[in-house]
Image 1 (cartoon, rainbow, N blue to C red):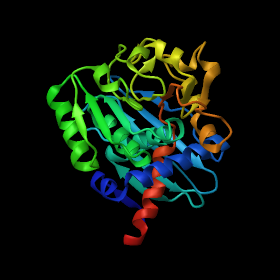
Image 2 (image 1 turned 90 degrees about the vertical axis):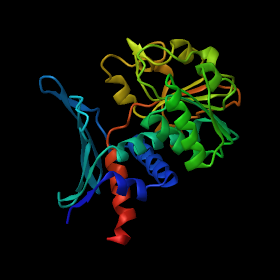
Image 3 (image 1 turned 60 degrees about the vertical axis):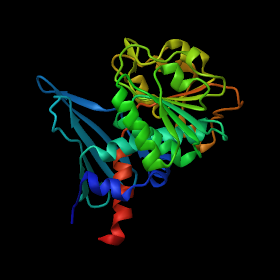
Image 4 (image 1 turned 30 degrees about the horizontal axis):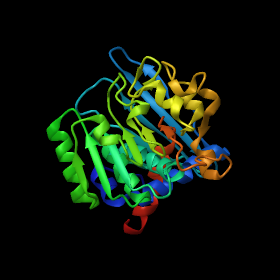
Length: 307
């Protein structure tokens, strides 16, 4: 029987630690070739596109996520999980919660692998769903003692800080500037819709780890290239997808491409990651395909005892 899952069920069943653990395993599986995850595909439909990301965990399951770019306020993502042995549809998740938690948890895995072990302060630029998911996941892998948040909207950044205090139990405060949120922070999260640089190398301190979640292409990016120049460690969750970006992704172009490493390789122990406490590390999140399906499979396992 196919299980239909909605956002409230995802939110109730997937805590941050479980979700980060799932994404850590997914990234390693992709690096080792067990998770087949080609770059996303898109079908132009006149006025918008249907976008598909798919994945196949060899011998276990396959599936896909679909979403559109028409911009309708009620548009929802759909994630479908097939049994790899029979082809039957095991589960369908409808909504935004699975996707945002998956992206946040990939960021959490990056923080765990690349940030200093003693990292305890986090600055976030942006106050939307993706920014929240990143902080939610980071709090599961590091004992945060303070979060600072900046957004252009004063009410949104104040509400974000209040939510961090209420739901994560972490002291948090809204600040007026990007540098006020990021300077002297151990971890910085950049999760905005800006197409022009907001964060530069001068805004972060030695030893900082940066998760970049928003635009990162050559003609539109939320950070300056000087941040990539300053990074001793530069990683992404799918070098194949990074290379397929249109327009091209900054970190996948010369002179940065030669330094761009697979986060899965770091997690698997075959790439070094951070080797010095003063190094700046940057993770460019591209959204490894198949990870939503990986997380849906884990979610079905979590829900199974209640079924």
